[in-house]
Image (tube, rainbow, N blue to C red; front, side, top):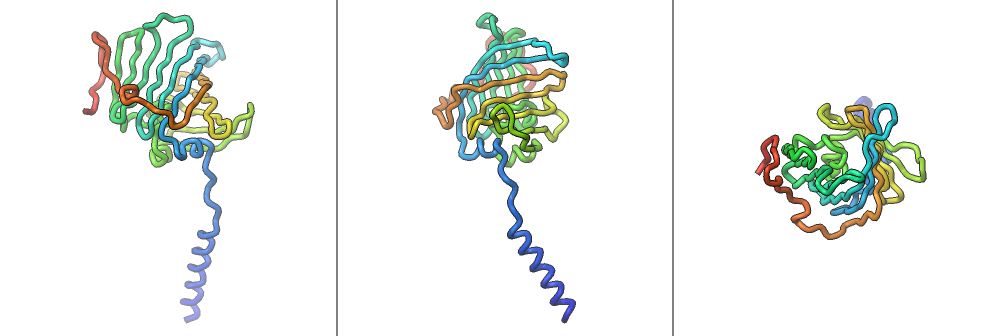
Amino acid sequence: MRVRLQFRLAVLTLVLAAAVAPARAATPLEQFLDGLDTWRSDFTQVVVDARGRQVDAGAGELIVQRPGRFRWDYRPRDADAGAGQLLVADGRNLWFLDRDLEQVTVKPLGQSLSATPMLLLSASLEELHAAFEQKSSARRDGLEWVTVVPRGQDAEFSRAEVGFAGRSLARMVVADRLGQTVTLRFEHGVRNARVAAQELQFQPPAGADVIGTPVR
């Protein structure tokens, strides 16, 4: 009888401890995604190589519609109108258009969840937790930072640091698998702005080489 009572007290102690244990605080990234349906922002991009030399710079626009859709349209500085890259997640596929090469690569979105840091912003919280490890970092440059590391080995980047001013996304610093560092600075971001359906659809340009098979 005494052993049974001690067992019940031990179980009750564990239950009470679990009940009063503090829940993990939401990261700034999770706070940003909370209640976010769409997001639209201009951005500038600078790429430096492993030696710290700038190898590319330009600007573009990012449109996000959660879950599973975004459009990242980038144009290099001083390039002609036909240059740059376009990345579109349409909810089923991830499309990448290299305008310079006139080449399109497509992969099913489920196979590409951790491939690009843009998916950090369009994934559901469940997908985010499954595909990435998160850790809040020290405040710097007036921003709150989260370090994100893909769990899978097929991601195109090794880590990303995401900086927030309050609930506004301000910066993203990405270390890719080639040793380059990509810094994105976001401006004029608008939460839950209207997004037209055609903005998140993709049709390969006539004459472009298409690598891969899309999910229909």
